[in-house]
Image 1 (cartoon, rainbow, N blue to C red):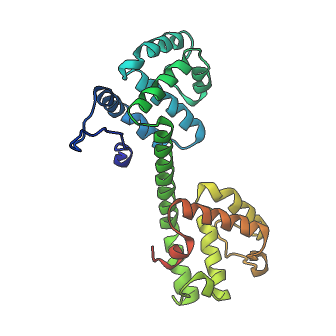
Image 2 (image 1 turned 90 degrees about the vertical axis):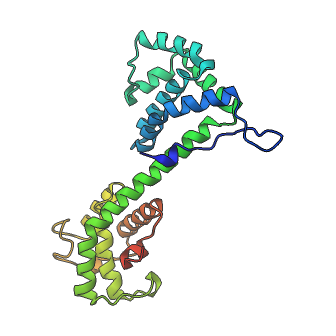
Image 3 (image 1 turned 30 degrees about the vertical axis):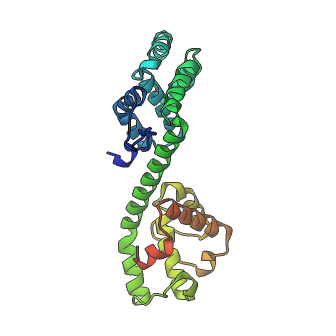
Amino acid sequence: MWPSLLSLPFYTPCSSRGMPVEDASTSRWRRAFAECAPTLEALARAGDEELRLATRAWWVVCMGGRVPECKSVHATWKSEASAGVRQQLRPSDTEAVVSLASWPPLAQCVLDCGRAVGVEVSHTLAVVEAEGIKQQAGAEWQRAVAEVAPLRSRLQQELLQNRLAPSRDAMEVDELRVCQVWTYALASRLEACRAQARDFATAAGMRNANQPLVGYDEARWDPHAPAWQDMELCVTAEAERASTDCDSEWRGVT
């Protein structure tokens, strides 16, 4: 479940005494929104833009079929879609669905009904997507960090005797070199950075990409080399997406 996604703000008028008053339109929208919450959860879980586009379309269809003001245009869309478009709204079907003549009126009706109760649909969907991407990134990052945690401990204990500088800026060459090995291992486990990790493994002349210290050539682990910098930037970006940073993870202070 994604509880934070199911309590997005609604505009609720207030009475002259300051007490919230919800009119009929807002109540209808809220009910429809709650019934379509599983689709928002699917949007948050979507792993790529193609799937996000399909899920956004399915959410519009869901809302259109439940908001009374949109049921007539939804019926028109459903009739047209049933003639030749799969009703699952898979990514491959999205283009066909939104190309139907009945799609713009359906989407516009949902937009208008949302605005009538103080909800900007595009903002709502953007918030769901952003939160979902953030949570997915965080989960993948934590998984990758956990996988390389034994390596980090072993490197720090055996090669540095657990004597770490207080910050990255204060690192001496020995710690920097050891930290590079951990960074490479982390990159190789992050989906977004695997290509850069492979490129660096080639540039570093690794005999076995899974054993970076076998045949280790310090000169080819140049932190200023393009292959290293591309990989390091990718890992840094993934850490930021997960609301953390590499330095903290290396020191185990997150």
